[in-house]
Amino acid sequence: MMHHDSTRALAYAKARRAARDWVDIYRPVGKLYPAVCRECHATEWKGRWSWDAPLPDLPRVLCPACERIRDGAAAHVLELTGRCRGWWDEVRGLIGNVERAEKEQHPLERVMTLQVEGDRVLVPTTGMHIARRIAAAIVRRFRHDVRLTFGERFTRIEWV
Ligand SMILES: [Zn+2]
Image 1 (tube, rainbow, N blue to C red):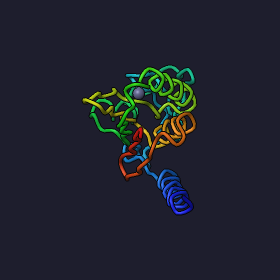
Image 2: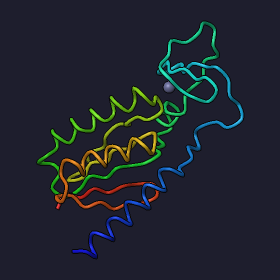
Image 3: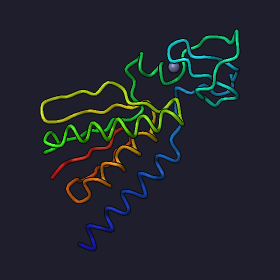
Image 4: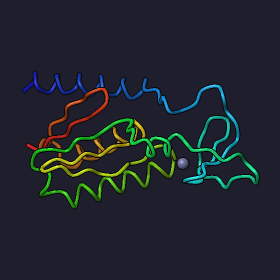
């Protein structure tokens, strides 16, 4: 049991580091300008995106999140497997709640279209941090009924 818990703690610590060090390759570096996303209307100012009302006549661009959605290029994918289908309504509600809160604060952190494939559900996200917050919310709710596996591009949550 001790061994299992410390293995889990190490995996969590490693995943936390990976999230902290994550660099969004869709985020332009060095060409910052005030701009507004023509798709979602988020506004950019000095590299930060917000939902502030845009100033008139800002250049219209595609924000990194909308760009990822257009390309189908998830930053991270949560994979829900095992006996999660029985909990699906609750899990879906939980994902929705985290997304609303996260997106409000951080316009580039969004959930893309959910993919249901047999007994697993894929939850692609446009950011690393929202994926971690959803995983944390699921673990808070289901505790020892789920097993987590962290990968570089995915997090698997298995209901056991
Ligand atoms: Zn956008």
